[in-house]
Image 1 (cartoon, one colour):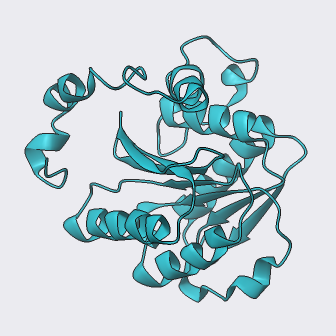
Image 2: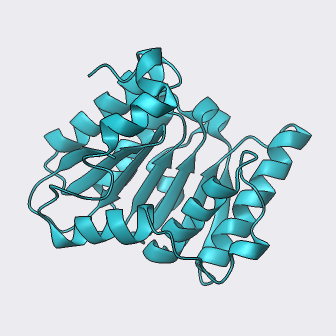
Length: 211
């Protein structure tokens, strides 16, 4: 199915097309099934929901990012943001609050996507949560992240917003996943609500789930 087709993003049809998969049905791995059911689609409230700011104007997005951060407990969160306008600054502050609430022991780093550096910037191999907005998802950043993730430990998580927003973004996401497969990494990639998620795990095979 062509996910860049505008009809595939029309919410009612998109919901029904994913209904068979969205709760983890057909997923054989217990750890991946747990991640889908109890993190991505968890409906029970968390302790910090009431204090979370909106992310991109959405409380649901803030809650999902909080659940991801709370589950992963990464040692460092890396947000790619230029923070040049007031709107971007407010958005970045909201993200920082959400990630701090989700994993208190993490450090949060802001990296300018207009000045993507080499992997030497993050030399220590620790578990990280990478967050990338649609406007910062470029070919250069994709190549840089591939180098980082090849050396990353299990539990590293990548979140890319709005992968269906354009053909270029979606094809970049597909090429990114395929290149990591070619390196033989074990990961689960999830296409969920216009978002691309990639989690390094211990399974013996890599797979993309549309949920």
